[in-house]
Image (cartoon, rainbow, N blue to C red; front, side, top):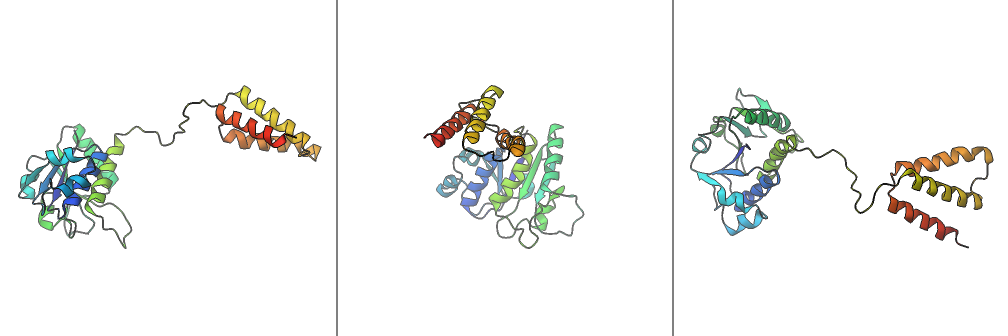
Amino acid sequence: MTPVFVLVRPQLAENIGTAARAMMNCTIEEMRIVSPDEDPLSSRALAASSGADEILYNARCFDSVGEAVADLQTVYATTGRPRDMVKPVFTGEGMAADLVKRQKSGIKCGVLFGPERTGLENDDLNYADIIVNIPLNPKHCSLNLAQAVLLTGYEIFRLNDSTPAETLPVPATDFADKTETEHFFAHLEDELSKAGYFRSPEKRPRMIRNLRNIFTRARLTSQEIRTLHGVITDLTRR
């Protein structure tokens, strides 16, 4: 299950299209639109969706927020302004964790996004169970519609994403093994000795260790080792 994203009175077709694009980025497929000012299937909206037109073609339009959320069991409302309402206020991260937990329990959830110029009105928030306020620069915290959709969608998406925090892609080659690296170090040390680099015999062991540490931290590939051999050979050619 993925949540329903509800665009309330969006004003520009391009913004509807870019919101669809942001939803597709985050694998959120169901869009509902309340009283749009422009046609969600106009050429401008479709062009702005950049290939996410499937979401626009499947989107449903409603005349009121109440109709758009009638079948939902938990509704979150995004807003950047303080409201005189007693409702739980979540960050984007907190909202995502709560939403995913509810959806895994079979609860159907939706998120409201307000019009570009004014955001959601208090009457719209009457339908919300939870307010979502994404912490940003307090001097300038306004977002356009697609930005709000993307930030909210990404918080949800990343909870189900298993991409490691760091990777090191090594196409078409493998990391060098110890035999290759030792051969390279021997080649480098030999040529540095011939060039007179190790002027102080007592400092030589520490200098060699420092050089080895530099190249070891780099996690050289077999191809990189071969390249470095070639560099040393060319530099020392007489």
